[in-house]
Amino acid sequence: MATSETAAAGGWARGIRVDAGLLAAVLSAATFASSGPFAKALLATGWSPGSVVTARVGLAGLVLLGPALYAVRALPGVVRRSAWLILAFGLVAVAGCQVAYFNAVQRMPIGVALLLEYLGVVLVVLWVWARSRRAPTRATLIGVVLSLAGLVLVLDLTGSVRLDPVGVVWGLLAAVGLAVYFVVSAHGDTGLPPVALASFGMLAGAVALLGLAALGALPTATATAPIALGGVTLPWWLAIGELAVIAAATAYLLGAIGARRLGSTVASFVGLTEVLFAVVLAWLLLGELPTPVQLAGGVLILAGVGAVRVGELRARATVSD
Image (cartoon, rainbow, N blue to C red; front, side, top):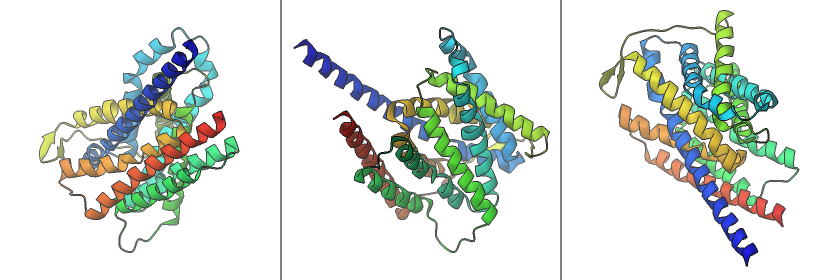
C-alpha cells in the first residue's frame, strides 16, 4: 500500500513539474516576443543592433547576478564544473545567435530570417536522435512538419523573395545558436541552477560582444532620443529596461527552467509560440492586425507542439518499459 501511494505521489509530482515547465516555457516565449517592438523603436532612433543586444544581455546578466550568486553559494565547484555550459550558453546561444540573426535581418526580410533561425528546432530533434540513438516517434515527426508549416503561414511569406547567400548562412548560424540554447538550457547534470546559467551566461555573452565591438567587428551606435511606441512617446531608457529585465533576464531564466523540466525537444517547439506572441504584440502595440493565414498558422504551430509533446511522452514510456 505504501508503495502504491508513493508511486501515485511521484506521478502527481511529475505532473506538477511538467505543468510548471510548460508554463515557464510559454511565458519565456511571450517575454522574448516583447523585444520586437521595443528593439524596433530603439533602432529607429539611431541605435545599432549590436548596441541593443549588448545593453540588453549585459544589464540582464547584472539583474540576475545577485540571485545567481545566492543560488550557488552552497554548491562548491558547481561553476567550475559548468564552465563549458556557461560559455556555450553565453557565446553561442546568446551572443552568437543574436549577432547572426541581426546580420541575417540586414540582408533579407525579417520573416525569412526568422524562418531560418527557427530551423533550430529541427536541429534539436536531430541532436537528440544522434545522442540517444533512438529515432523520433511518428508523433514527433508529425509535430515537426505541422510546426514548420504553421511557422511559414504565421510569417506570411508571400511574393517573390530573393535570398542573399550570405544572409542565408547567417540565418543558419542563428539556427545553430537557437538549438544550442535549448540543448544547453535543458542540461542540468552539473547541478548549476537555471538562474546562474542565465546570469553568468549572459554576462559572458556581453563580454564577448564588447570584445567584438572593441575590435571593430560589431558596429555600435546609441541615441538618447525618446522612442515612439503605440502612439505613445517613451524615454529611451525605458525601452532598454524592458529589453533587459523582461525580454532578457525574465525570458532567459524562464526558458532555462522550462527546458530543464520539459527537455530540449519539447521546450524548443514550445518556443515557436514566440512567433504567435510577436504577432499579437504587433497587433496591440503597432496596430498590425493578424491575417486569417497567420491565425491558421498559429493553429498548426499549437497542434505541432502538442504532437511533439505526445511523441516525447511515448518515447519516455518506451524507454521506461
